[in-house]
Length: 359
Image (cartoon, rainbow, N blue to C red; front, side, top):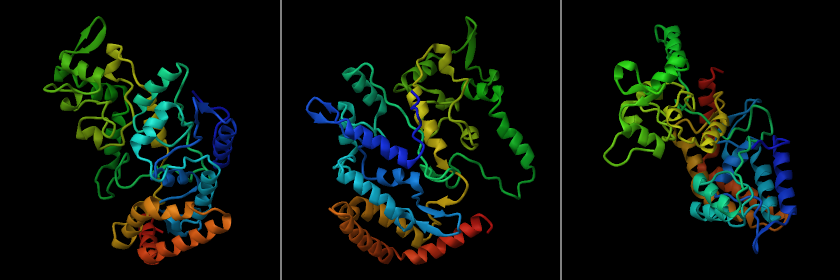
């Protein structure tokens, strides 16, 4: 499943897309689209070159969204891929279900996300038993920069108040969750809980409802799954555990003591791989943020997601020559700065990063 040689940089990524395009592949009479996305993907793919919501660069400059130094070059690259027929012509107006349909029909060679990956895999296997969906590590222009997204607040990390009296004890508590005992108890519960027993040398839940929920991706109506008992719940994507004790620590993506092993339940390595790949693509050094919660910085994000990437960027992509692209970009950038009070937002975010990083 590993792609070799690896696609590690934006340049290699573009080269891959151009090679796919040059093959002139077809499914029946339909040409294969080298890359198909939905509108909001344009931003996240740009993270590979350093595009971000708000960020603090190594030179100390703070910028956000299309105010980033990389923004114009990134959109220039997307525009060129669009003009060359490599990027789906309908990506700005395409809905999730339309993208899903294209992927299932086999006419999409690559993209950023699949709305229903299980359904897509099933459909592609029906077309060709050898078909595979392969995950690719996020290319980066600069090592350590260019994450898929970033972490704010708690998310999957823990911040300890400096006034906490015994941080070393708290760290030992957190470490316990990564121990053999910790993994086992979060998957099965303590022996005193009476939820499991040993049968034929294996741990098994006494209540068949629990095993049924694990095997079927959730409890049936009127029954209880592992989340009810606060146990590891692999089918809950956003909350992999059912209790606050494990949800409030930087817990691992998966549990090696997963109770499904006792039932020979086939595990979906694709879903697990997708979660791990995404989380490894998160920036966590504090140099990126959604905003500071203030009106100025929030207005910049609202403008980008609401007006720019859904509407006004279309005027940039409508350009037919590099000169027209430059003119359209400069016009839209000027509107962005004016309508969002961007410079005031930069000043606010500069203070925010200085406080966050004790600069």
